[in-house]
Amino acid sequence: MGDVLRNVDCGLSVVNRRRLLLGVLPAAAVLVAGCSRASADELGGQAPLALIYGGPQGCPDCAPAVAALLRAAPRPFRTRYVGPDSGVALTSAVLAQARLYVQPGGGADLEGAWRQLRGSAELVRGWVREGGSYLGLCFGAYLAGRNPGFDLLPGDTDGYTSSPGAAVTDDRDTVVDVDWRGQRRHMYFQDGPAFYLNEGAGATVLATYPNGTVAAAVAPYGKGRVGVSGPHPEADESWYTEKGLSNPDGVRLDLAYDLVDATVGRS
View 1: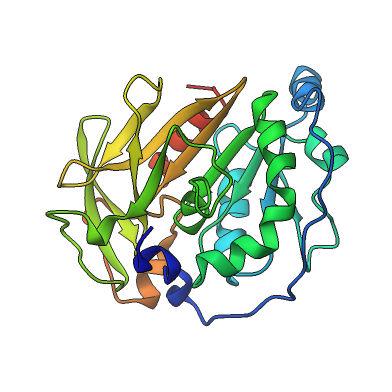
View 2: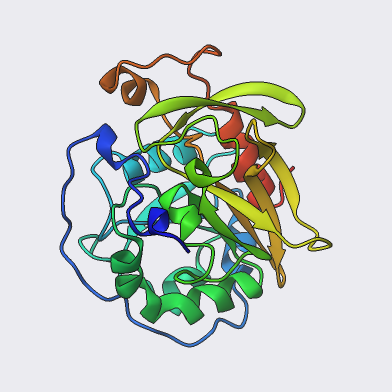
């Protein structure tokens, strides 16, 4: 990957950067039945659990924005932070309780973040392979790819701003228009990835950028699913206000709900 992947910011400049305490997530054995507890929760009338990574390369608003989104969704989730500073280590026992794992936006050093996450790579891959769902947003979507990353996608990622004919060619916070399921929509964007998927991989493309590259998609991984978005569907009004931006569609979260539902197989 080019230098653009090593210096992505992915929404972190929306708020003041805050370096979280560095720590390596513990490696663990591959799960045998990743979604059994999540399925039991829903059958029992309890909202499923979403785990949200909070640690190095995070930002004060990125993980909380996702947590608020999931709790307020039409089909809500319970949420729990995992990783450094959360008090909850990412282990097989913790993952076994969850239906969704979220790697949020916010980051300035992809390789540096990966050094903190790679010890849990096989744990996360095994959980998704056995039926779990991974959601990656901007920086977290880069990490769904490979070199470096969890290698969960049937293909790879690269910076949209460096793709031929890109409408945005720098790392400023801005609004980008996309084609989302055949409708023109606008989304918060800050140096996010585009996705280059293998033909015949069975992936569902939810959105494309103006130059035709993939902006959001859901792909199978074993028995599980991987949902990724280069723009930020979770961005609330405060993100736009902070940077003096406006969304021609109004600030709506329906695209985020669509992506979440597709990632967990509810759409």
